[in-house]
Length: 89
Image (cartoon, rainbow, N blue to C red; front, side):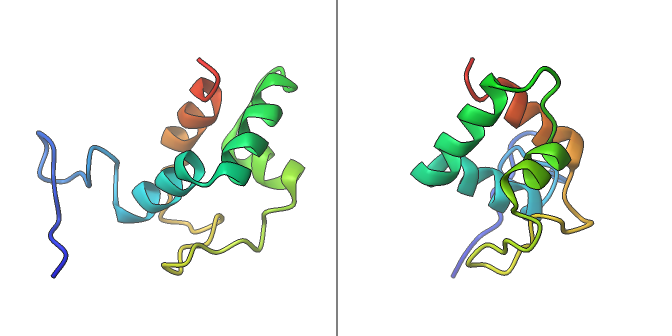
């Protein structure tokens, strides 16, 4: 059985806005190919953003193993923008 783990705020999922954003963020940080792609993108882009990363890398149709599309409207793109912008920090 999987339990929802919250940190501080009971409306958040593992510190992320929601499960969808957590799943996508965790995949970016834990999949070597996606992580390296995000690092290269961030280093080569003046104003990196989640939507631009998706477009630039051709990930519009990418779906996680859990069924979350990289373009899912439930994703907190501001939070994912932050992830992409800080990936090489």
